[in-house]
Image (cartoon, rainbow, N blue to C red; front, side, top):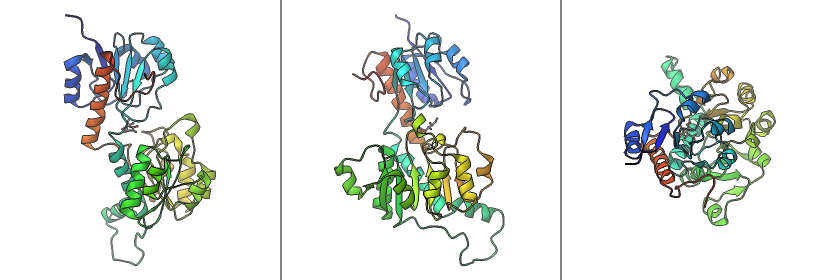
Length: 325
Ligand code: 8YV
């Protein structure tokens, strides 16, 4: 019998997903959640044909040159900003990601974060837990309305559109968006969504949500200048990637009352946080968990496994990112 192909799982995942992989491959899996530093990742990839990646591993020319046996990198995430696709293609390494399976779950969370920021939900809980609830007062923890307001979406991909559906159909919001390309009219019309220039988006949105993929061009897409265009009564929610927002500028705007509130699931340099954000009460902070429902995390893992099985058996993967047929 021919030797089974070897696959490395970059971090701890669900045991039954590892069992699924083990039916096909000889699997090496780490024992804990700590991301492997690149030299350790390279060491463990020796002799491995496939990598089950969790989104934070740096797959660049250095790694590829040091891992000649590697043929497939299958991400369980939709974001692939840590993977140099051109370098992978140059080395003949196929890459896949996990779109679609996390769209609705991530949109639910983004919408929830926006609601929490607008209606000051976590601030209210902290207030109550701290024993500060004395008596009702007319403007106690009064926030902004979400229903009927203007929802601004920066990045109108699958997740942006899922958020737009929630806003338009569930909350009667007027949807405006900015994206490199306009949606097809048959997608735009039912949402009543309107494409606007980025500055207009910033000026008009009551609640702005960021869903753009990270790339060097998207770095600090929202900085001091952009924040200055927003209404002081507006909220900003970021479920994209940390680098999209200048966190220091955002903390300054929130502290100065130039922006009402923010909901942040992603941060520059995470898991470290800008201490200025931690000191504010008008920001809701969560540890990059927008896709974290159990069924969705399982679906993301299963899609990565399906892609590994396809690629290492010479078939076309379900969700390729490079070297497509
Ligand atoms: C992941 C994500 O949980 O899919 C993505 O791009 O941001 C999340 O679903 C995260 O990337 C884990 O590293």
